[in-house]
Image (cartoon, rainbow, N blue to C red; front, side, top):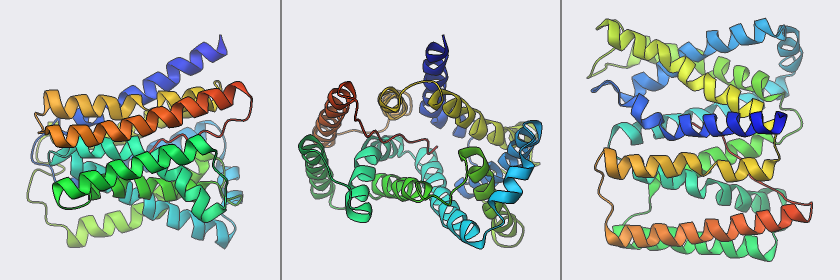
Length: 301
């Protein structure tokens, strides 16, 4: 029963993330920077309320009593803000397809970072998957004339974020996320008040835009809570398979709903990346059956 609930929580989280471009495009002509700032601002009190209900503020104080933890959390906050900011810009500027590519290759980037930074050893099939994905990305760069910067930024920003979250000083996920949001919120407010001059719609322009921006907090926190509930109930190998739901839905949305152009050449190189994911997933399934899987799972949106 618990595992079934875990699957439903996981499906819910990744389906919400998959359809997230629809939410961020509900109201036209809102700057991506404004979206990012309000996403941070309204997530902080909501997550604080959840922590208060769970009576975990003592855990928060204890976790961030160390300057080392605060420093690591600050770096994680910068990476997460980068990931969110680039994603918001991509989905509001007709680059949903390229954004989806970033989340397709994110697990493979995380695996590669594990080798380079942590000295982890890859199994032969994992090496093959990373190599095939690299060929796909390079081929796309050659065809387009420049690297797919949106996809690479999303993948590496969250790959590095995940790498930092593996450090022993990092507190529990809900607590560490609150710390990261707390680090972001002051700079976000400063930028909002003193530096940004929105060229589009902004908070207070109408009831619809105001509720839309306030709702961005709940839209951010809800799937994260569902993901956390899922991770407690089902194996990481299964959760790792579910994570491909989100970029798959985004790809479909980009092509069929938002009419983004996907040329035959780009589709072919996308196919190379999907082959890499197929190899990686197959290796993960077979290794899980032998009881020693190392699955990379992401929740970046």
